[in-house]
Length: 398
Image 1 (cartoon, rainbow, N blue to C red):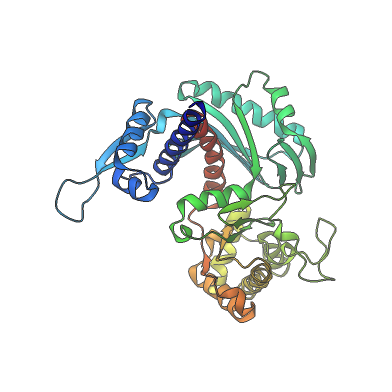
Image 2: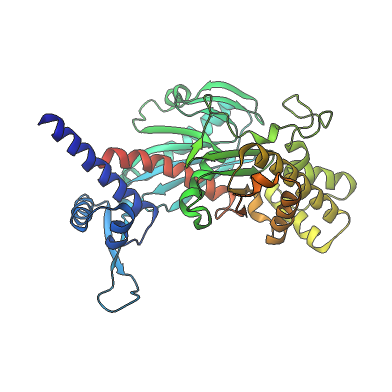
C-alpha cells in the first residue's frame, strides 16, 4: 500500500510539473489544449490548474477566440510577480544585469563595461547585484543566473576558460559568496550559446517539433550548442559545441587558442571587421554590434569591398556548417548571436552552399537554416532566467 501511495504521489508531481511548464512555456494556453497535449483527463487538469491558481502561480486571462459556436476557452498564464530572478549576461565588451520573471519577461537594470581582470569584474558585478537585490527584495527572488562567453562547469560552478579574458579554473561560487557572504539564493552559471539555444527551444515556433539541431553563436568568436534527441548536449566536461575551434584550414591563420585555421578566424565578426578596416576606413560604431551593422549596411550598398568581405564570411560559415551537418546529421541550424542581424537572403545564400556541398543522405532530414527569434542579449538573458524558473518549478510543485 505504501509503494502504491509513493507511486501515486510521484505521478501527481509529474503531472503537475508537466501542466505548470506547459503554461509557463505556452502563455495563453487553455485547459482544453493542455488536456489534448498531455493526455490527462479534464478533471485532473482542472484540479491541477486550480491548485496552481491557489498558490498564485497561474492566473486566468482573457477568453481565446473560438473557431465555432459555444463559449470561448479561457487563457491561462503564469503570474509574473510570483517569482523572479537576477540575470547576468557577461559579454566581451559589456555586462548586463537584469531581472527575469515567471512569465518569461526580462527587464534590464544595469549595464557596465566588463573589466578584463576577474577580481575587478567580481567586485563590480557583486556590487551591482547587491544593489539590485536590495531594490527588489519584495519580488521573491529565487536565484541568480550567469551567462558566460566561454567554457563553464555548470554543476560545480567552475569557470573553466573564458578566452577573451584568459579566466581559467575559477571556483565561481566560492568567489561570489566571498564577496556576498549573505547570499542564500540559488546560483547558476552556463555557457552563453547553450542558454541561447534553450531560449530558442521554447520560443521559436519554427523548431517546435524538431529534436536534433545546431545553434551557431556568431559573435567576436564562434560558439555553439547541440540539440540531440530533444536534449541540449553538454558533454562530460560541459565543453560540447565549441565549433569555432574546428579547423577548416590545416595551415591557416593563427588562432588565440594556439591552433591554426580555426573556423572563427575566418567567419567571426571580429575577423571580418578587421579585414574591412585593414583596407578601408574605420567602421562606424563603438561596439562590435554597431560596427557589424555598419559593415552589413555597406555590403547592401556594395560600398568599397564590403560586399566581397561579407560574401567571404557567408561562404566560410556555410563551409563550417557543411562539416557539422555531415558529422551530426541535424534537422536544423540556427545562425544565432549576431547572426540575428543577417538579412533573409544571406541565410538563403548559406543554405544554397550547404545544399551543394553537404552529403546528400545527411540532407534528407535537414529542414533548413533559421534566424533566431531573439537578439544576442535577449537570448542569453532569457536562457539565464529559464534556468532559475525551471529549478523553481521543480521545487514549488512538490
